[in-house]
Length: 268
Image (cartoon, rainbow, N blue to C red; front, top):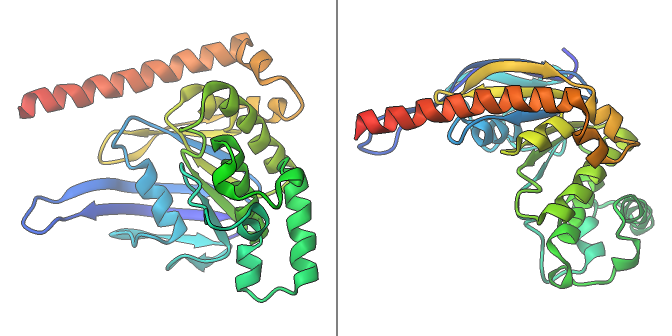
């Protein structure tokens, strides 16, 4: 099957001498090539666990993940990860960070330079190739992380709260960049976020997960990501249909959080 297929996925953690915890239960989802998917839910609903399984960092307790029919059994170059913190090589300059993957694969220097120059231009880093990454702002570092991920030409880009540590203005600019990269590269993008507005802006398809054990609660097909590629994101947020879906999802999440807090009070 083409695309990313998640079939009956469950994950249970059992610490030594402790009680088992079900992080995910029977999660099934088909993501087509080129889709932009955001995943939202209350804290502890298994969003990051799901992403780590898709990346191949965790082996599920049950179920299977396949990419274009190939089982996912570990990390691979067909999936790229962008973390909340850039996880960059701070002793290297921007160019050496971006071309790290192709360099490790033995790509010839001329081809590496061509790839890197194109991505530096695409991410607005063309004038920063020789800068050490520790001299860059948080937003610029996340641009480097995006470019480094794209340099490996993965089929799927997995993003775990990639904009969560940024200030509001930088975050908005980076949201626009994510939309631009999605449209220009045609990559499949799966983004985890705690922000309802961000999930609406960056999810042509939005998945809402229920509290532990994590499972898919509701799914939305939304027009805002496509509209935001060539529009002011602030104008998108002012649309009546955007506000209506935002309020609906906020009510869902608040209800889930109240349920979680109620469980905690009973347990205490």
